[in-house]
Image 1 (cartoon, rainbow, N blue to C red):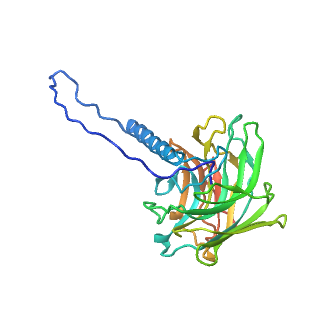
Image 2: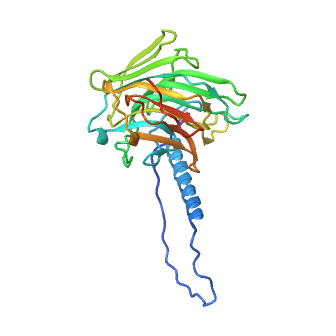
Length: 306
């Protein structure tokens, strides 16, 4: 989920031929040291990511729309937008038709004073890595979860939502507060007909919706996310900063109705453009159906119990 999230790629280039003479007194070509090569690599990654955003936002959309996009991969276990566990069709040798989990709504606090910050915790099918190398990803994504944003004054906003890309995020009228226990499930009944359920176990209130959606069933994920944000006034596109969140404890996670069976190779860390860790998932719990997700702290300890 995001205020907007990018996927896709652009590639281009040009070539030219020239002849020149070089005197014996001229310096040899400069070789970049390791630090400079790393800096250049970061600039290239940023340029590619911004090019992806340009592709996404070339199509018209409401200025306040929140639009999700699949994972933006940096490396096999690092992403610009997701932190959590991602299981893929090629890794598990199966497609995914249901996903579920329990977790507590985290407390969101400003990471930097005077800055609007955005985040969400959710589960979904599609949009993730097809295997643990993350060389291939799924382009469809149906998801649901909890948003926890902080405005520039430091006021937090909590809400339940669902989304089926490419359509924008839809807020529900289900009330949630930090500390509430929620259960979220996304399940395909008949082919291409999905039911999304969000239950606030602390209040007993439930939101449920059935909708058609054409998924490619390529991945299942349990993550926290930081979005890309479109300015309501200028239309500028920026990466949304992540607020400080209390530890998000996903547990009783299932895929296709069975315990998720998480393994460490499925972990995905969230990093910024300097490859600084923003959010880190823990190792799986003892039952391999739960984990903790931590913002701005490492290591992130695994849950002691379900």
